[in-house]
Length: 186
Image (cartoon, rainbow, N blue to C red):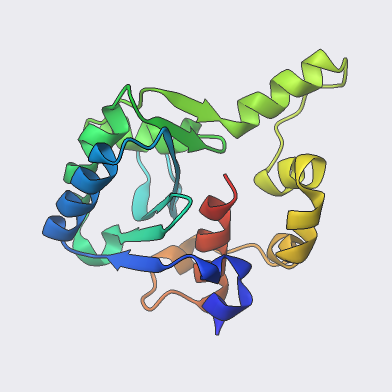
């Protein structure tokens, strides 16, 4: 199974499709006192006019897949206090399109964000290296090579997920693996 192949399977993976589930999750995360949470979004042409299908959240203990395609756009509403919380750092990789979609379609203004792509860019600058927009796998190869290798990110890079796959249910195994791995290492 995809979940067994992904080494992150040691963390429970929870599917969230109902608003009450999402509300309960957000309340639990905001009251936990944790300093940060990893977040990623998937869908078709993310950005101001894109279609959000999945929001992934990861803590050190759990991974949550919020299925917006199944639960509907209102599933995002309970996330707004978490996304706008100044006390909880949200860790993204290249959050530009995610932030645009969340703002324009869900009126959620991200605050307290750490973007690993921006962090990588600052590292390049500090080391007098040429700037470029690094993908998450590139950042992992730079700073977490053993994790990149042990989680077989080379496989994920060789087989990109077609944007239409994020609208299919059930999610294709490769898309599910990409979603889990993409948030688990932030």
